[in-house]
Image (cartoon, rainbow, N blue to C red):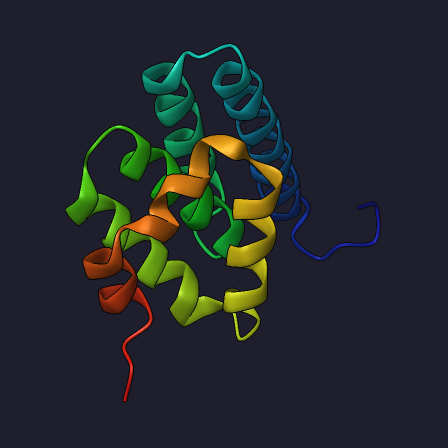
Length: 118
């Protein structure tokens, strides 16, 4: 950072990355304790600090779906999809990793909206 021509901007960028990571981590810990709304709030903060990363939008989408907010879930998952060319693989990995997210696969209407068949 000493050789950065704009050290304050770089410091802000690094701080935002750290805050995003911490809020994302906290969100998953809260989710594992069954505190879904608090997890959602934490992940939303992570997204605010790192709006150019698809992972936060994907996590937020899954949690919104878990809370029954399907429109918000779809919006966030579509945002993640638009940002990540490997979205489908990431989506499947997330569903496999987190048992609470598996029910999304049974929602054929939602899945059709997220992955339209041609």
